[in-house]
View (cartoon, rainbow, N blue to C red):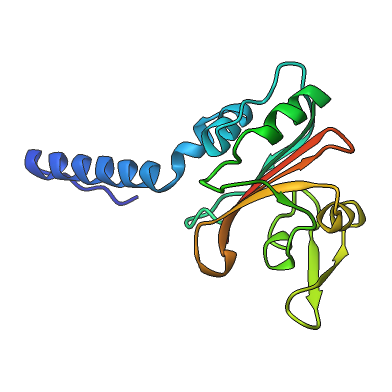
Length: 177
């Protein structure tokens, strides 16, 4: 076993370096793992998960040195909550909610805890989703409303919030790839 002795000033420097690395890691995104799912949803969207909401699925695959992965939260809520949200401005400075379907350039990034979907287009405008059937159906639906935020070019990092009034379901995903 290798052991060594550090002088008093060297120990102080080592501690400061460790503390600096920890602060940087938390600043870059480590704080997200300290929030509950509902707190993280509120922090990222500005909307509260309503009392009585039934969580369908939630998860976080972020990890590793770069923190790549996806956080998702899907829950059912009351019609009154859906109606209230849709008359409020959507998150992230979007002026209005957008009517579905979700463009393939955005939708294929969000997996919502599934195996995900692929998006195929012949003309670069109209997309057809394939893969997870429920997710492909949701993203293709003209009955949904959504807001999206691109946090890096080509949607490498982003957020997607979908309101499905037909099912009274909210879908949220935040991805970093």
